[in-house]
Image (tube, rainbow, N blue to C red; front, side, top):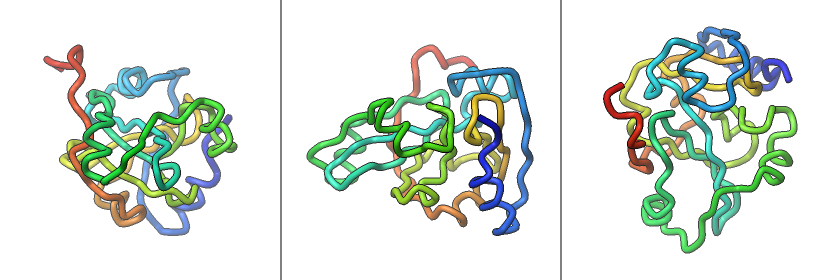
Length: 162
């Protein structure tokens, strides 16, 4: 699937500067970081959670893992689990499975961002395919999406020393 027109149109209509790059096929956020020659902390991955109030989008750096108990605690949820591939396919029909952009507002779902991702000026993320990436300023992303920023993830053990 090519670069998401939904994302491209959204960024252009809102006159937000961004850079679009294309790299060889990469399925994980860490692979995207490698293909884009970026540290994993600068590449966002999207995790979809099914919770009490419906689906939630959680955006975190590639070098971190979602802590579901932290998510439940911070958001006062009694139930939260990772969405299945089938659910994700239905929610994001215009995206390759696992290459969803971090714009929950385009898919009618709330967005939560791990506070570690908000530390840098720029970040990169999949743009609907496993080959297309958007690079943009975090402050522009925050303006467009208005996510809730919380400490929701923990550092992955194998990412130390990067």
